[in-house]
Image 1 (cartoon, one colour):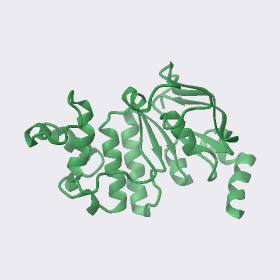
Image 2 (tube, helix red, strand yellow):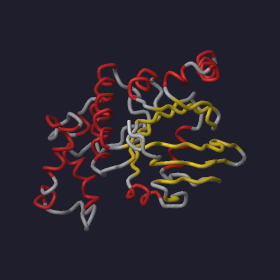
Image 3 (spheres, rainbow, N blue to C red):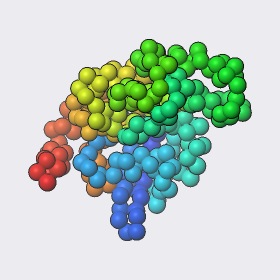
Image 4 (tube, one colour):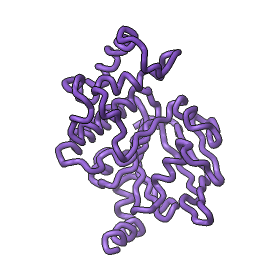
Length: 252
């Protein structure tokens, strides 16, 4: 684990909707080179917090700093260009394009003429080597020519991660990366996250606590929009307030 300072930090970040406070005074540090998990019961404010970080939602108050730059009011696409890239809980790929074409679309971001879908095959083929390299990183090199809609669910999630990696994120935000997966797919995705985190920072929302325990250097627990606990898995799993929060969701 890297002992360097935080890559991302928030100060008293708050979001309210017509009087309902979804995120309240959240101050959080995400250190460079770590896998940091954000957990909590349903409705704890985790996804809203992600939406604030990526500027899908404007903050009501507080601040977001990335590499010590205040990005609280930076537009969403500019945040992505700075190196903060997010995957979503629901798989988001182009179903009628091939696996390779999906990654090529993401790679077009780096062309000066960006996103010209009617470009010739010769121009697009320039990206094939890089695209195939990314597919190899996520274990999809053998499925490059398959139409994305033909992939099983777990492989679609791997493809989504491949398109996210094509944007060369320094901070990767993963929203429920193992949601809806069979046990064998969970193992593959856990190995994949560990592999891609070797040279980047990961902040992930995850409900599967065995995945959290396996991957995370640090865990932040949220409840009702606020931070309930923060620390290692051993620390937070023994915290009585955390145990009560999770047991409450079981018996609700």
